[in-house]
Image 1 (cartoon, one colour):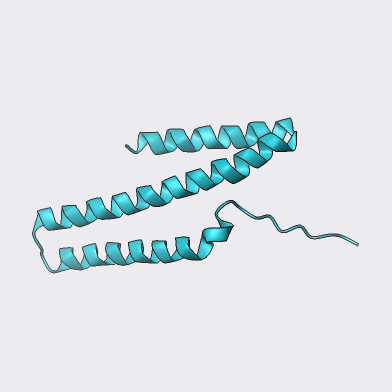
Image 2 (image 1 turned 45 degrees about the horizontal axis):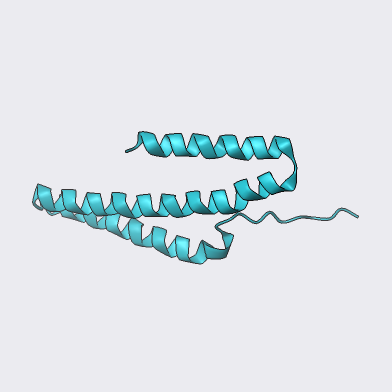
Length: 102
């Protein structure tokens, strides 16, 4: 008999809240689209774009935090050196990608 193991990610416990947050951000982006269609003032549009960027950045920090606290920490405490290296490398790649967008 084969046992099926369900993998749980660090963000799984907050998945519903994260999805709601993404839907709000999606609504903000649709609002910006409507502002462009309505020929609104450019500074007002830029202000809304900044708000979307801030919301996405906040979400990214939340995901990064969960990755460190769950995935990386779990790999480091597992004793599996290969998994620990993989998770650490993933973390560093994510941090570098995130830093480049700033």
